[in-house]
Image (cartoon, rainbow, N blue to C red; front, side):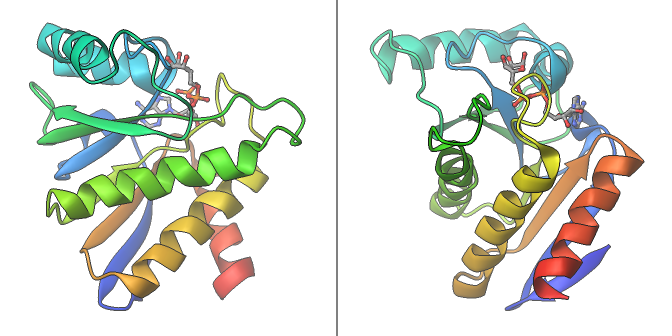
Length: 183
Ligand code: AR6
């Protein structure tokens, strides 16, 4: 499904984000930036070892050894990926909903879009951040993700945003959520 918002394109696709030829793909990382399972593991495997080396440099130089807080985002090159860049963001772990999970998830999207704009990228692809290992209920996460992205696109002309969902079921949830809010 594809819609136009203020001269931008928003689309929903089923697929593996490591195969997407966007200017940047977003990684649902953890604070260590050292890789993990899920989409993070897939991105590191497909990008190659140099990605891990750059992530380690960011930990040392930009973050002074600290972990990247949830909601924040940093950018690296894409190395062996078809995408030029990877934006690493850390989603919130779902702890019942009263620990600012929605706000922190929204910040993941906002901060990734801010990096997109800062670096004048025209196409960014997001996975469904926090809805795997971090257990954020996908219906709620989809509403936060979509509202954050749509409100941004109404204000800024950046280009194209693709949600790359890993299953048909997840894609249906995102599309239905979009229709329910904006249809
Ligand atoms: N392409 C697109 N989506 C994918 C792919 C892929 N190749 N692989 C998985 N997904 P998760 P989180 C979907 O667990 O919940 C990692 O270990 C998946 O089906 O990857 O933010 C990190 O290191 C789900 O819908 O990320 C962290 O420790 C979505 O991506 C932790 O998991 C997110 O699932 C982050 O957990």
